[in-house]
Image (cartoon, rainbow, N blue to C red; front, side, top):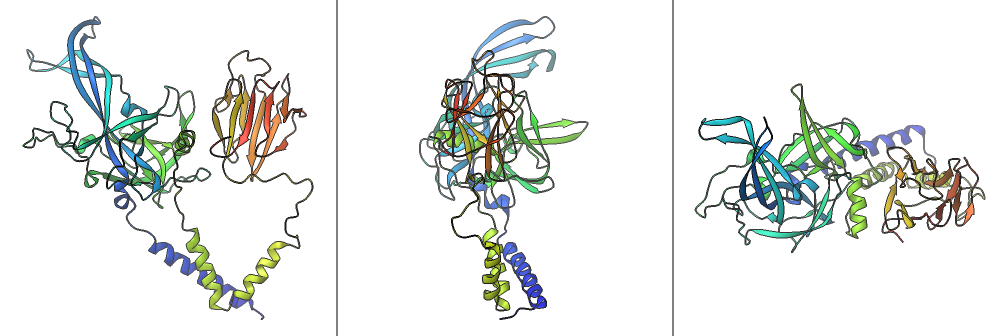
Length: 458
């Protein structure tokens, strides 16, 4: 069967038109459709209160008190199903100190020189089920809230994240899918921020004496915006997404969604500079790593790729393109025979790659190796590298580099003093060497080693 250029162009045009129609049908209100993946978190505190005069730093112990801190979290697990696992910010579940203005009764106004400092001790963490779970004197109605345990809480220099496990799956709340680790969202793309900003709370009191803190699905606010840029913050160079979807106090820990409804970031903070608002969310890649370490399953978001494939097939079918498809597939093979690989071709690495410390300073820890981003290793490897303690035997300042490029993984010794080894054999300096899953990288000796693994480790 002969196919003219005209017919082939018609097929391509029909395929793209059909793919556009199908993709449009798959849309919906991204924010509203995913509000049931969000919960409100309340952390209960015991507090010790102090009155501080900032003019002379004098301190008066006021005494004990109680407090509650609020934030947002989103479910992870089997996407679309009820779950007990939730991701939030560390500062939502571990606020240690707060400073507030002091209202001077004698002056009848807030003092210009005195503040109240509250030193907090967290006592219990809850996911709230409705708007009246907490009374005005900070007591929790446990029939309206589910207690949580902290499975993971970041260190001070780590990305501001925490993972909670509720005592039971939260009825009516679902796990959200996450953007795939090897994907990214670009500048100019639209995003939605979901959460429970404190500004929307109405501090009314119902007949039970409870203050109203929005916590139902209907209380989740949705703001939209666009991605401005990707940047980093802090000495540890944590990767964040800067965007224009408005967030404020209470939104912390909530999800930032892309057009497919996948979580691309964790809403963390906002700032105002020269009357311009900036909002930041921690990239979702860190969440994947934490869930991997905790052995918690999470589902990646499903893209519309299958719709495009279906559209292309349908377009080709319009002109009897089944034969054309066979021809194209034949050309794609390029004469190579099944299973044959060039002798000098490096093995491809399929899926997500981890460096797992097996012996030495990083034993038991895993680090993601991302496409196109070299991982430098040494005593002083730079801001994004794996930094060994000073004077670690056998490890040079800038010792080695692991790189994933176009699905192929290499390790390169960077001119180290003590050498880099792969499976016990020293590799030449300044020359990338192909490696694959299961290979062991040693720095200087077998006392500092990493094993190449996928998700889940060895």
